[in-house]
Each structure stands twice: as structure tokens, then as C-alpha cells.
Length: 246
Image 1: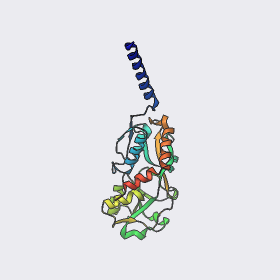
Image 2: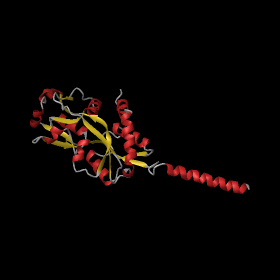
Image 3: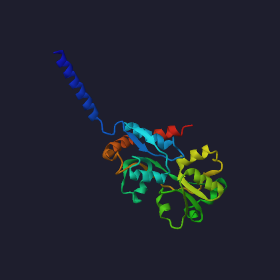
Image 4: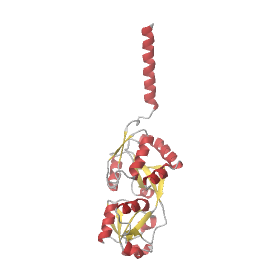
């Protein structure tokens, strides 16, 4: 009788273990592979990714890469997910990339110049006479993207843009304000590199994205619920505010 009860108890425990195992999606306790800029390996994007990984019950593994390489790694399935992809890039032959809605944040791209040239750029048309630093493969606001004749110097990092500006190789560069200003201040250049008088009015929407080769592809609805809930709760806003808090 005792042996029978022990056997029954073992069967019940085994059934409970199996039920628990199959109650969670197959990505549980897996590793979420992603990437951020080499300039900010522990920056704001890394904190966004950690938040998402926690909500998806996954460990996070980040390999720093420039933006263009990140996109290629996402398309090939080498990484599972990216943050920081603008909505405009959906029109750039990225059919295999899936945008998760809603956008997790909205930022404004901003022109920066040397302080002694602050009034040199006070109208959009002034850009036609300037060398402009941009990030490789990043799309900016609509008027800027459709303007013919702009002299663009493409680089991989914000630091490169600042260095080119200081050396006089470019006259201005464009980067989103919320990321550039703290970095410029950290470099102790906030008295030399300042916002230009002219600034675009448009704000850009930024999305979490996966690809059709991502291991998260079967769970995109779950991921979308995570992002939607986080946006409704202002979680990304809170993470950003804490990150830039003095």
C-alpha cells in the first residue's frame, strides 16, 4: 500500500513538473541576443533591452555594433531584437523586419554646430551650403530625406560626428537631442558644440523591431503586449528619466 502511494505521488509530481514546463512559452529562460552602439555599451538602449528581456523572462546578451551592422545582424538572425529603429526606415527595403507597435518613444533630430557658428544655420536652405554629418543608414525627417543636393558625410558614431565638427571637416551634424546633449556634456564640450538656431519641428517615432529570422518571430504578439503595456505605463519614459538623472 505504501509503495503504491509513493508511486502515485511520484506520478503526480511528474505531472505537475510537466504542466509547469508547458505553461510557459518556449523562449522562457532563453537568451535574448541583441546589440547596441559601441559608444554606449551600458547606455539607455541597453537599459531598454534589459527591461524587455526581463518582461519576456529571458536573459540578455548584448554584442556592441555600429547601427548598420546591427540591422544586418537582425536581418540574418544573428540577433533577435533591436531598439532604436525609426518608423521611416520601414520604406527602406526592410521588408523582412517587423515593427512592434506602438512606438516606444518619440525623439527629435537636432542640428549641432560649433558655438562660434551658431547663427550660420538658421534656415533649412542654409543646409545646402554645409557639409552635414549623419549616421550610416539612419533616416531623418521627411524634408531632409527628400532634399536634393545635400552634402552628407556618413559615419558610424556620434563621437565621430563631434570630432569631424571640431576639426572643421563638417559644418554641422544631426543627431537626436536627448542622446547628443548628455554625451557632449560628458566630453566637456557643451560650451563649444551647441544646438543650431534652425531645428526641424518633426518628432520621430522609434520602435522595437524583430526579423522573420528572429527566434522571437513566433512570439511577436506577446512582445507587442509587453511594449504596449510598457508604453501605457510610461515605463520607457521612467527609464529614460532615471538614466539621465544627475
